[in-house]
Image (cartoon, rainbow, N blue to C red):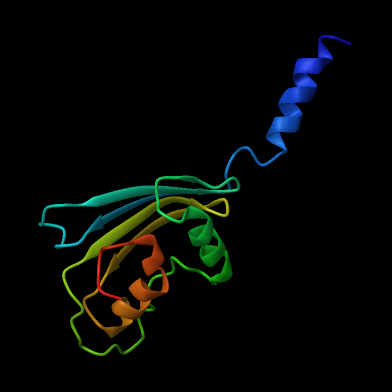
Length: 127
């Protein structure tokens, strides 16, 4: 009976949400990829953790979005408006799915995509 106690405790921890279903690494270059002064944050959800300011709010907002890291479809016409040199990269897992997404502000579609998740990039671009 005493031999089973550690096993039962380990199984309880494994099912309790101790391992996060969302674990993201966020890197932002406010002056572009060639610029200086990059920001780096980490965001974990379930349980909330990491270094991103207002992590609980970010987790809640991410869950409310449908496909927050999807790229701009290739067959879409975008306004040719330049939003700035900012670039961001988000990698890791989101709701147990792998993520590798690059964000930029080079046209209207990319600006809109950036703005949907700009709460992940505090202080990186005008909003």
